[in-house]
Length: 314
Image (cartoon, rainbow, N blue to C red; front, side, top):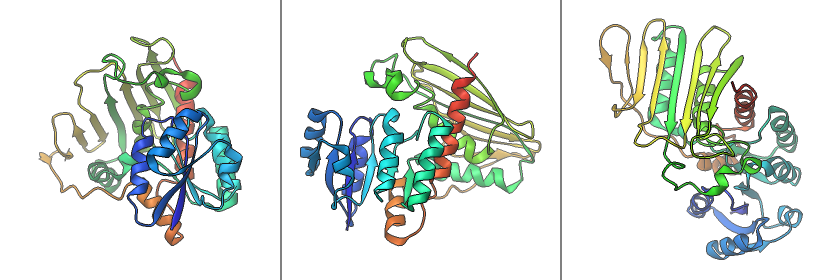
């Protein structure tokens, strides 16, 4: 049995992760820590575990083997380093940290401890994205020249996002740091490490953080990658496109599955099933001494490109 501690209730996905962990036959929620005692006690009662008001005590409990981190992002570095040093396995919400330097400090602690680490990159488990990745890696599109992903919603303009999403200290940013993280880790996965970034961030409904955002990356071979996101876009379907010297692949918009064209008409390849969810890979890595595909190096890479995006706003 893997005894799991819940580390923070701040994130909007906290309830989902707690329920997901409870659903595993080999997992038990044993303890919960949160800096907000009221929120922490309420959540602990809801999920049938013990509330712990001191993090150092929480992280050294004998009945906590692993933790799920849903604290505010600005707390990730300290919390995860302490957890790693205490030998606790870590599953964390994205992003890991606001800067590459901080993320590397976390990575050093994780690697020295030998714990099992996983960051939540759910879009990498999707069958359609894995189909696109296979198309790009196969070479049939030729050398990749351009990749763009748009993922936006109306959370600010329609008023349904919680105010915590606009707290720059806790979040480190706005739409790009949150929703745009999906585009960022997909671009990293498909395109590799960028060399430069330039961002346009605006404030249409919210003053404290950007709610409308685009970041353009350039890569060593001259290719361009674009991450588009926002909290002020209504009824705008997700879009993805990748182009090479020989052809183009598309996904989203009004398409219900990926397709590509290399000059012989549009082809709709078979899309496989979704892969196991990130948390499932983490639990499996703890049980079977493997590693999650969504590991610490990928987490550092996401922090690195986020830092580039926020340091290069025009």
